[in-house]
Image 1 (cartoon, rainbow, N blue to C red):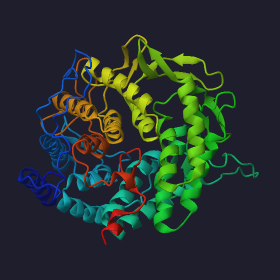
Image 2 (image 1 turned 180 degrees about the vertical axis):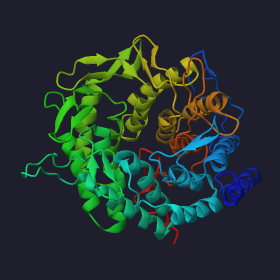
Image 3 (image 1 turned 30 degrees about the vertical axis):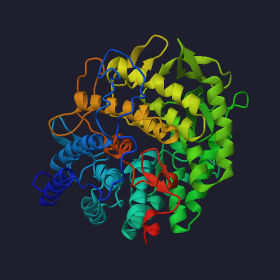
Image 4 (image 1 turned 60 degrees about the vertical axis):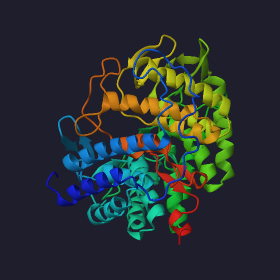
Length: 496
């Protein structure tokens, strides 16, 4: 609401904080002053063409990111405060389910902390505790609400120690738990395969729906529900989420160890046997590795090792000297498609943190080439012909995420240079007069009218972390797929 005095005060506070030069208190010195030129050439057409500005220091770059984050956040505050999503071209808002769940606010809490906006971070927590309720008669998508809302609440709790956030997280977790419940016909016949959750659940009644699902929606619950168990001492959340991951793993093809892209959760049979690492499967693999790191459960590492070996054997594809990951039949392993896009670009980061750095670096180079070919990466392209199949760009973060993890793992400054070059393209093409928006086409650069909450939760966060991550405690943190850091040891307890 534009006349909301609280919102106006927030904007003023953030602007003063940015330009005071004191964001986040004491800062670590720059490791190399941003003067190392370790980047590759990139393509010559579109955007900055992979050009590297070696004279810009890390301090200057993080200030640029802070200013652009402020620009986007101020647009949300002024035109969509208290609602889920900002529509920055029409200067309007939208709510996913007709009633607000404060999605952008909850999704942005830990970003605000990591960027050093302490006063607003704690003020926003108070606003969330006062105004967020999950007692709503709405059917929500379990996957999306888990990664955005539950993940955001848990991360903010671990950073702040505010019990009100943990109470909200527990309330939400309990309201989502019916998705895991076994269902039966009146004759007592099971109509849902044990372990595979429903896609939708009503937050008030617990009624479930959604008879088909995919590995990502089944498996991308483990970090959040597992952390909820760790923080509350109630193992039911961990056990339910783990059973879901195992249910998918147990249905991998015995001939290849690949999983498909669509499964019937009533009978547990694949209706789409296409295997890939894009949307609908991507974060299943991500959570196998990260669950091992966060919880130390060997089962997850064993499942990851089996799955990633199959992915590298059957899906990796070299064309004209460049590495991509396409699609294949899960049973035969035969190539079925040569499509690749923005969502696939989580994989270099995952490969890097799980130890396969050479493969990660090769794939990152391919993704960076894809970005520079059009000036911004497309949602999907055919890498065999380098033609667009889905020309839109949704402000996605995955390529920035991978650049950050590769920087942390290798220490090679070229990944910071890649990130900064791509950040400049975001500013050039996606910035509006009040915030940022998606592109309908990376070819024409026609702007859409939607700033997803993940732009502030993920994209801007990873851009910032490339140049300043002293508040993160990287070795203690595991990012969920919405870039919410979940911690082995809660930072607020370490500071007591």
